[in-house]
Image (cartoon, rainbow, N blue to C red; front, side):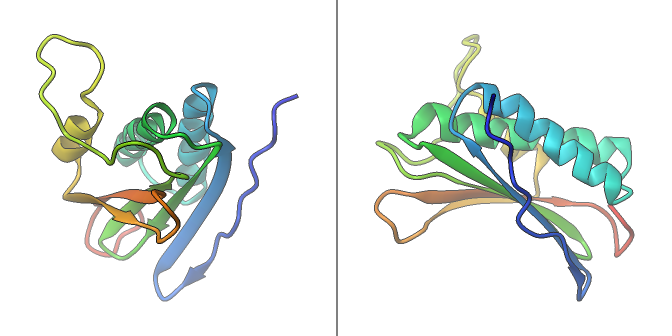
Length: 147
């Protein structure tokens, strides 16, 4: 039986809602991360457009953490502010940081290009624990309206 992801918090204070979960760094976790994100946004009352975009961004960021690091687990957080949704994926480190590259006709390697096209901002920050990092992306979602 696969480990069950544990939601860490879900609070509503100062116009911020937050949901975080941890999954094993396996390719099978990508679909689970996408489903958890979609389910949470449904609970928050977000429309299908933003849900689809967040699901795609979560999928790309988790895939990068699974494929390009030596992590045993990844932690994903979705945080809603008044004007943005922030998605952050923390890994346990690996050989290379996030890189955007043009892959032409190649199927793989377009993840951060997709994130860049969909999001208003994205980046990566070291966590201070070896080569572990947090890759984050932000989406504008309306002027103070729910998702």
